[in-house]
Length: 151
Figure (cartoon, one colour):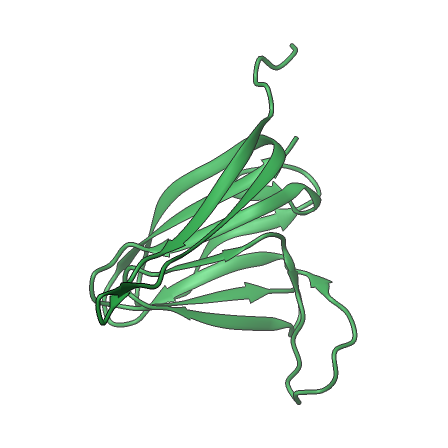
């Protein structure tokens, strides 16, 4: 069966607005990512007691897994009004890095690549992440996950 979905361009706009001393100091940046044919958008409840997997990267699509090489945009948004979450990007083995996402804030990236160093050593190479997981701070938190991939 042939797909009836036609790939489209995803437009991401980041806008900051502030008025200091009666003067607007605004900024807007926009990027267009072409050929997006797959989108995964969902809300995941993240508990405090344990780390839960939000997304797996692989070479074939399956439940909760996207094709790593096809991912072009990822956004994680903490939908809570009070508590932060810890988001962990992991490579099988010991490589991982964590990001703290405060209440109401978002974190974006455009691929599943990471580089970590336990000794603050010099950069050598990016490696492929295998998963993204999260754990909440002091109460369960809803996290919105948006992943856009090419076909």
